Image (cartoon, rainbow, N blue to C red; front, side):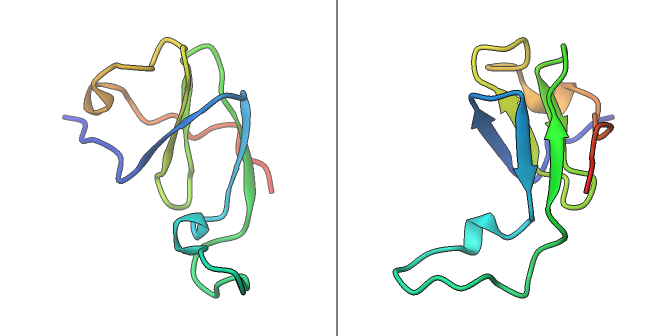
Length: 83
């Protein structure tokens, strides 16, 4: 049984990056946080989504086949990660 990913982000490009800390970046004097993970670049394929292999954040292509679908019904797709 699949469960929903911890966080789902709707994106408009096939290539995305994730560092696991973007949600904590705020404020005028922003400095990179010590939390998170190494930045990885992910490629969304014909499934319309990809999962970060570090933090399980899911990136869904806007208007793609996974947009509007119950994310808990979809398998994890984390291949395509590159440092």
